[in-house]
Length: 411
Length: 147
Image (cartoon, rainbow over all chains, first blue to last red; front, side, top):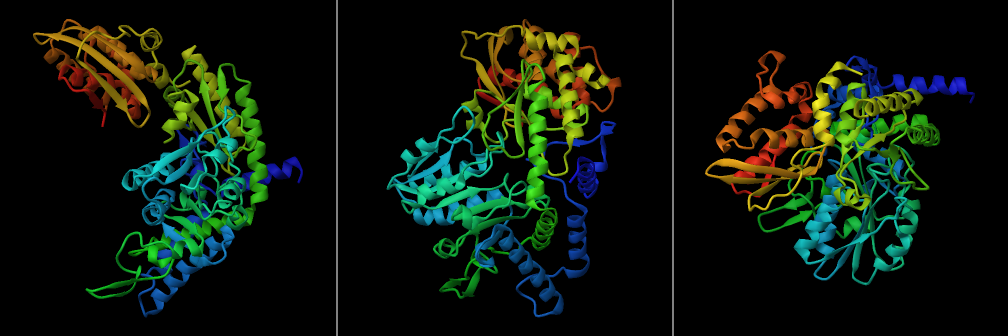
């Protein structure tokens, strides 16, 4: 593809996202907060409208025509997710509210049934609070201990230290696929291989990975994989826990109520099989259908092309930011996806965020729900720009220009 | 650059954030930590109160320019006042930075420099954090949040 036609194709992708046509504070909106949530393509918005216009009914219950259509759409969405992750079969896909709930499901069911006093759980120093606090609570409840894989100054996991943390007491390893602060892509295959040598299962927080790279759970070899639809151009309120059939079968129910049961009497309740055992109550049917539309949208573009767009932009952004005096990009992982944290000398991240906002540039400023990582980096907060497939060089130029304004204002 | 930004980050604010007044600890049992959990601003306000009068006040901590400047301006403006007077000053400051129009700006002396916060609703908590910590400290509590 020539440069000209690549630019045209990129402009076509951007046009798929109606929200990006808006202006903020009188200037064109530059949306660089994609790690927080992504915008939705028209295809996803239209799919949600179509579901509520033509297919809405409750699933797995009705004998009527409409319920059958809704159930069909919902289960087709599960099959789409299954293909997207390259799972072995759709029953390995549990619908939840998001990554946070997926991890809480694992700690509440696998955790409570497989972790006991004196056992150990391994996480890493770059975890989001959502892959830290649920494990911490489990450890308190069960009398287990949390072990933490340290990171190097480049912002990568210290794999030698990881190997020494694994022991006969380790019950599970839970790590992030892509860091929401540094953008580090962690070597999940290697992490899984080491853990599986000792028969230890591995859970992966994929919240920041799914919008950027093709995820193949069989190639990764992980036992659990969690992600949220809203960070990959789908609706809010829906997410996925992938679990291997063997693991899911071995786990007790999560929440209880309708749909998760096989038969109920006052004496005894028989639980349903996975994934239904973990899906009590009416699920977010529209959300699941919207997520499937987002997956179809991504498949239409292709992850190879997405990676090319984003890696090109990431290189351009690192270069642009590095050339600005007083601006420092944090971490230098060999493999980085979509996320850049940076500091401006002498200016707090919030002030950077406020100035950028008034220049029309949306970024995140703060601790990014990673307080232990902030402590490790020795900073109270960072400014973070995060990319998606609809961003372009103009967005990065606007970011760099707004950072000049920060320097002007704070001298 | 928008004029809103100049109104928020006026010279007085930048000066107080870069050279905060009363940035030190105090030998006193009355001190409280103020934390803004959303953004990570953390500061401790120390206060020496006798007969209801604030004889000395200081702070330590990390935060954005607005939080630090507000803390610095606060320490200068409440020293020598009673806790009740400080409280009414804070009520007026809060009214100024949460007002829906500029017209209600009341003369708050040096604290008027914070008037620009009004156009930045998400930054109001940065400006009020040190005050919450001050009143928590004066009341003998150890922790204050803006929530």
